[in-house]
Length: 92
Image (cartoon, helix red, strand yellow):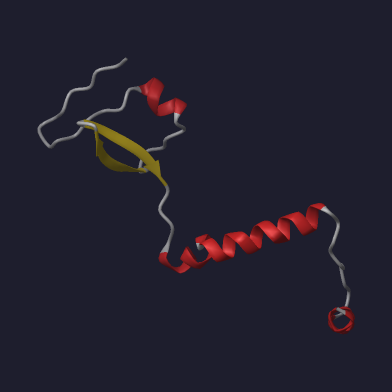
């Protein structure tokens, strides 16, 4: 266990071994939580506002379905012309 000291601006330094084992990078964010009178730090990646849609539950569920279809070979294409794409879509 490593002990850390709280600095004058309420800052702590994460020990190098812990920093590396969690694959943290300078500038990363940590969520803070109090649990059973203990401070919990949880690494978080922030998502740009214009990218939030991709991380919605609904979108991720659809991504999973698409990944499964790709893995099973349930795809069509590639196509050389747009007209070939339209023909394939009309068959579905």
